[in-house]
Image (cartoon, rainbow, N blue to C red):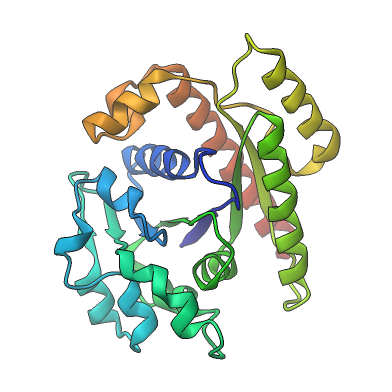
Length: 262
């Protein structure tokens, strides 16, 4: 089982879209995928038609009680895609920092939870809120690789700086270095701002960056309206083609990491 966490401390950069697009392509390839929605806004859950207000169990319950494999399986919600399940979010997640922030031993809750269902899934993709707290720390700690979408505009680069500094701070608490890949999103080749921001990313984060871009593509937005993964809604769209390229790159990075560790 491979765990990818999609995170950035800035909102609106394409985290949920990236999570869904990668999950859709993996599922089409025959992989069993578990999505974990750690954002109290529950955008990932809503995307698949899950009304968080109607749920009896959610990711919140993983933090408030010791969950067995059976309880985790009961928390799972199937989607209309046979190879994609989701651990859904609810607004109650917003209270976790206040109730658990000072409590020790809460940084590995999600890692332990997904390990209990590891034999049921090939990939786990975690979608994070844009706020550093218990939820993001858990999602980062669980990751084999962190995927950091960054909108190609200069204000988003500041958010990336904060994200990288967060990883550096957390790095002091563990021996294995975080593996992360920066993904330029919402690239518009017609604008000078996008081009300059992309060049800046290349200069500063040369070795940590996927060399491609996810372009502006209305099909990505329309797919969300249709509640379909982009590769199902528009298989030959620019956005889908870009995400297929990104997925191939991430898979190769995982292979390289495994070879180095072995």
